[in-house]
Length: 241
Ligand code: FPP
Image (cartoon, rainbow, N blue to C red):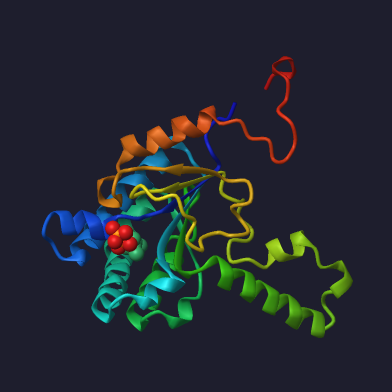
């Protein structure tokens, strides 16, 4: 069936519930979530998974209380600074995706500096989805295609799904093979709408701060057993491979 996924994407959910169950402030859950992220990045690198996307801040997260949004910005800036050396030592390359312009200056500059600092990484590519939304990704791609058509660079009659794909934030990286959502939910929540067309979905009951390498391996084991057909028919066993 399947081997290791080439691209794993994670919707890191359950930080708030993790904190509330412990009588802690929600932001402590996000802080613990940043620690989980460390472990999962390291495990993906160790397993030789080439691409990992983590959904760190969605376009809808602006609707949270101001203090929580502010704390998430601070956390992203701190993470970018505190993890830089370790990520470079692990040969990780960090690539931010999303509309970074609206982030706080501290978060935007911190993430940009981390991307520059790790740009030579040859191991895991970590796509950090910040201020990312699947719908706004499609909208910005459509906007760029329209502008390029007006400039005469693209023939509107030739616009197809490949043209769209080439203008998404995630270009030129492959679509995720496996999308994991923690916290027991089964929703895509405006994540990778285009890119998820053929992704396998795995819901883990673990809250993100509790999600560790063992939980990741459970998801990878489940992925290995799935039969992917991409709209076609399963291949007979005699064809092998
Ligand atoms: C969802 O949990 C999680 C988020 C909105 C933020 C994810 C952020 C982190 C894991 C912080 C670290 C990230 C970086 C890049 C430093 P929730 O608050 O919606 O949880 P709930 O569903 O239990 O309320």
